[in-house]
Image (tube, rainbow, N blue to C red):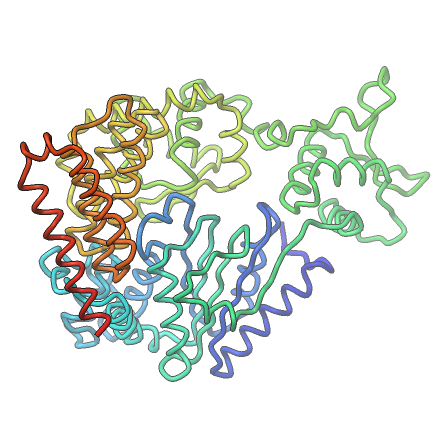
Length: 542
């Protein structure tokens, strides 16, 4: 449907257009757009982007599953920026992916090898572990500044620029720190830039990035009032003649079922039109509900109260195998990587059926190997159909498919994502030992790539799931993720937390001295980690 400015949306639109005008005047500004699901955040932002003539648009989408991955909201942004910048340079027209773009930018002396390492922190495909090892021991703040140094080299060539971070998941601390550094330096280095962050709730910003909130324009969307629902209905029904009104019963039932959400108003109106339930009454000059059942006095009863029935009506004739794939996809999440979940092909012919659902029913949209549900409301409606035990069975099926696919042979770049996602599926299948193992290995990989923020989160997850195991694991299994977590926290200069973790680990080990005698090497490793912590802390305090 075309974008329609309602009175409650006009102020939001004006605020974002002011942010755009500030960017035109070389005043970099950030805007936070918040509001409940399906209130039109994306549509509003896209409308502003469409009116920003001359601006380049960089956009990414995140879900709650992505909050574990450092810099994930910026991965798509930076990849697209490199490709766009390479194409701007003479001879870069054939650049098709971020690896080719990074190579070309180095060849053209826009990037140097240090820049490639920095960009590799965000986009893992452009730098290997050997290059990333150069980041070892670098203070987190210094690392953030160095990454922004590299980003500025391409962003300043693309301005005027709009960066849009959409999604319903939290943004990881590393990304917040980078965004704060970027906006702080933008006035001098890349002034024609505006940043839009959308989320369902007001974003949780780390203390290191508190300056972003102080300087941000806040835009909050709320559900339509009933008079706005009436205005929107007139547009949807094509009523332009002001002498024609909307019958009160029609307005009441649409507003009640849709809860003031524009998307649901569209769904209810479309469903009723397809069922031939709305008619124009010439005598009263009203758009009214048509009485379908003469035995009932309540004409509104024919419209389902459960919106999922309306949202899923187009799929009523789906074959059982396609329905199974739709349900499996709802358990995977709102978006997924086809390369990773092709492991399900042998079990349910997964990807061929995903492409069939995309072609015939317009369920998904594709960008490269990534697929995303076309409508989040449909995704949540399908998910709501599943009982807890059904979801658990699906996650067990996914875990078995991964285990049978020889995941050790998956390339290193996506290996960490595989472990993290498989850990989540194990946890939702209540396979606590499997979840512990996969999160531990995801942490080890992130640690090896010097991504200490992500590694620390993976180790914390491993420790949590270890506690849920029915049989207490041996001391060695308990100490390894704890020592690794303490080491990562030390690298992040979170010294008090690191000291607490390592001290607790040693105290537990001393309480089980008989086991220590069998693994003295690990005990020494814990002591060494604590000693390294104190040494790093003394340098920091000095």
